[in-house]
Image (cartoon, rainbow, N blue to C red; front, top):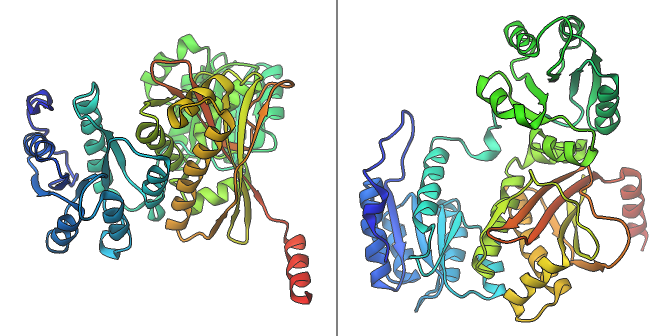
Length: 454
């Protein structure tokens, strides 16, 4: 059973943070409720309400609003899925953070829970290694969110680049500038400088949204150039990017001058992956992320929940490890129609060994195509849920699954939003991708006209 003493002394509150103070634990197991109540009381000094099933929880929530609900799935009278459905359909509770306690869950149950939207999950039994650290991370993230506006009302103040922005590349190497120009020319408007003096002059005139600075910049040291660009305040939201050998990146990050640091390489796939975190890869994708800024976070969260609840596997982002999938690999593709402006495609890719492992965990037999199709269907449902929550109409297609036995290696397209995951403690990997294109207005008008004539 969980030991509350492992959390140490209660956490102090930061300035301006509204901590999690009111928590409900809904589980038919008295021992689980007792352990979690003691843990939250000591760690967060929170008031904890207990409920032995979903019906008791729903009645209590009418009278006593809470900051967080811990919800078991398998309970008598009203189970966790039924309770969550009622919560999400109640306007006052629709955005209540919910952590699901999951034991053995079938694919349909997991899909339903993820579609309804959960903050995170905890796998039973709760004594497994890492449970305490996971709980601390979850509650800490809720404290941060408590002092923030909803995602659709504010934008991140971190390093963000939108497709179509102006990027100044400062580097002495013509070859490297050419590489950036050809790799990102369709994504950003590229301007170039071969030395620090020219970079300052161009920056003052062109007012770029971002400046990428190599380490060996003639006529001015890279860090000195970064300092001057900050001082000149060309833009309040100017993004500064350092490009250097991997061995130098940690030291550069510590200086605090740059919003991002990426390794110097001439491999487009590697550089593109490292650059992905700075912003979307295409104009339609950028426009969609303006409407739904939480999209990438929802993809990550959905993958973690699917693997945790359905497969009993912990996954971790591995975007720093860039190894294209070699044949044989499996691909599941799902099309999305997003409002009347965008068409999108959601892909899930894994090597066959990994897909077989997922299939065995799900169905007991190695069926890589079926497993990947089911996983993609569930995660794509979460993406749809995120878009619908931001008032965007979405129509989700059916998964089209194929296994590529021979041919070219698989690599993430540059114009997609992607996340690579690895299963903790193993070599199993999969990748989630989301690409968006603008609908053809001429074709759409013609289709509407033809429909009216039929």
